[in-house]
Image (tube, rainbow, N blue to C red; front, side):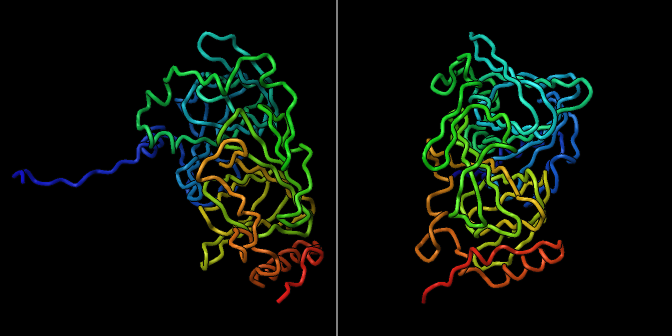
Length: 359
């Protein structure tokens, strides 16, 4: 054996090093109260003001950020080898997309729009307002990609063109979307998620409706769900990284590990909650209007990925699945909900969803 002292291997987290190098606020924990009022600071790499969100529930499989574009200004052009979905929180403007050697194309967006810049294509966001900033929420696969390759030049300055994902057609962002079985809507641009027509989805309970979004042939995907006044959804669990963003309504989410304590997070429009991997969680509407949320997550219906949500989410826990039927939940869940409704002066509608479980 060498006479030299044996040194311990120094493990590094390349993604966290990059986050710290950005010198902007970093939001951690389980929950963001309001992305619309989140404090932002100048973000040199983006060319606007920003904050990075690395909640525990993402498990460093993906992350989120909030960025503002000053009135009448642009963000810097960028391309990167990780996926990204962008949801416009406030304002209106446009995005220009291109790959080296192609013609640039531009599409306009507004508050409530959702889109995904094609993988590793150049893109630049422009504020179309001269009197107010644009604020946006992005969810990316940067943690996974950065820790896999640990090379910023490869991540941000890679000339490879994903021709199978992006073809600079004139209608790439304007073509009519396509609906598939299972409430799956495929489109490279969703103009208005907040008012998008959803389809009936009884399996999760609460008189719910839902649509799944496939964007830019990504491995990450999204869905929007709505549930009725005086109702709540069935408890379920899945993989990490589902950034549940509240679009309207008032309520709370319960989250807990198997056999562990239940944690409550009260939310409003602009709140973001990310359930940790395989933690049970359940959403409750205590307000006077239906609740609608947007979940930016793993789980494309087209492109398999092992950390994604699975079919077991809609299968009864008694049968080996990852959903707890109303009749099997802890009685305290319903009791807490009834108390919260009484405080808001809202009547429960849950009796219609409970059926007696046979012995």
